[in-house]
Length: 438
Ligand code: NAD
Image 1: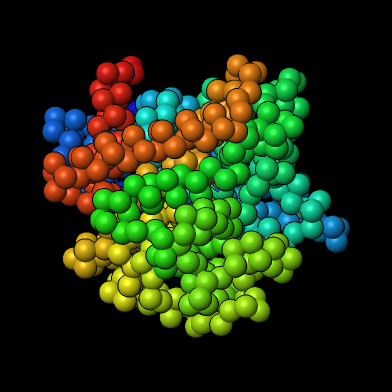
Image 2: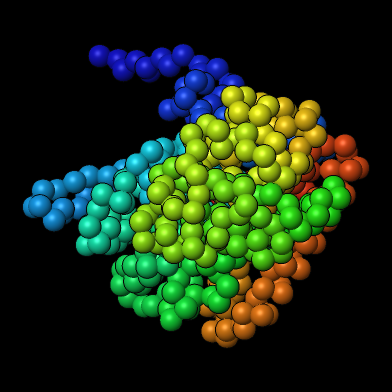
């Protein structure tokens, strides 16, 4: 009997094909990112021959996270770690615990980390992780077990010189401490540099907790100057009053702005005379959200987008500013504290209406910048003062913003496209210089 060679139909070579598991109508934030790459491609010159690199994450890991629940059952959660690009250095990006996390969302968030790290010229690639879980429904013990099992599962691809996670939505310094400990126990030696956003006592950096909000504020000040907007008396609306939104609000108010509206997962509060930031922070700490805050009027969630304000800071989740609300936004300046809050279609509406958008990939880069400082401090075992850290952060953010502003003026493009031009050029230059292996 002769053996016949099985015949496989030749696969069509489609250079722009999507990952096989994603349908065109299921792209979500990854679709937003792909459109952003398409918009920058005409400005990349000869480097555009490498642009497909940006459309394909380097490595994606899906893990099962089984844990013992307090009631004696075993629950399984799905976890992800995506390393989008490591041409310029190890992967870097946060870990999100949220019931709606999907692989395509983590892909987009990892890609935005590549762009962000290159935009501020940090020696990192881009990565992101997530677990599909509602941590608010877990006990402390269950949360620790989810964190430790997830860390063990992704332990094969993370490490201080490979990929360094950090906090994101619903993860904090306590979770980073568990991640650092789990990785260290598995490795057999303490590796503080495996995550950033750790408690100060474990090699965390002073100023890290406030860094993203401080960065949002720093670029906000620069952008306001460019459009002749005085922050004294400027009306501010913030969506998301967590790590990023509450710190940014506090700094803008300290600079003379009036916080008129805040929306979070629990509700929307408004006070035209100004919300007391410290009182609202304390209220959220005690009650888990802004709903019910006494010194304010409750608003319908959709009305938040048409509140009379000068500065709007989305600092919650992606996909919030869309064709459905972009035409109603009153602000002159929109600073993206969140990752991916504006869809490309909404971007066009905002541009037409001459609302200046400072995009996420520069606006919220303060967090990863101080994460970089933390990583450097861990490696050198020499720790800087908070004043030193804040001064270096402000310098890096200002310089990056100025460079991007100039590119935007030169090419007459939005700040988002300008940031992508700067960042993608850096990533693809590294790609070209390194060449393809083998
Ligand atoms: P957080 O968990 O501290 O706060 C998230 C906030 O968003 C909370 O106030 C929550 O109530 C609110 N929120 C959640 N769902 C909402 C909804 N459907 N509508 C309105 N509000 C909602 O998270 P964070 O660290 O402040 O992150 C916020 C955003 O900033 C995310 O997009 C994150 O990726 C981005 N970001 C965070 C950092 C960082 O250092 N923490 C750095 C860069 C970017």
